[in-house]
Image 1 (tube, rainbow, N blue to C red):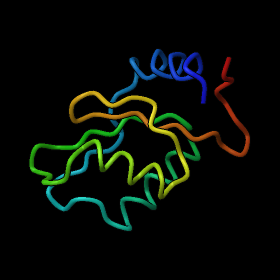
Image 2 (cartoon, rainbow, N blue to C red):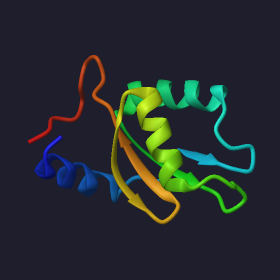
Image 3 (cartoon, one colour):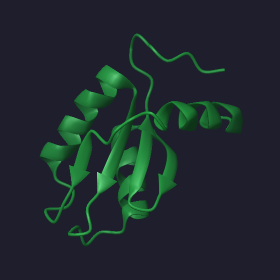
Length: 94
């Protein structure tokens, strides 16, 4: 992914509200399955890691991205953006 594409996706992500919150239970197989389904439907999602979660948000973002074959577009504090093109892409990258 180029820096121009990443910047474009960050701009789209500014308008998004977090669709997932990861709490004290941490990352589970069920959460990964749900994230996978939402990524297929939306392509770009925002995830928030609550303060009750003991895992590092940056490491958690990287772990999710590698498990779901997606890209971490941006990490800010306890929030991160994930992108994965769908089988029929809705977002056209520059």
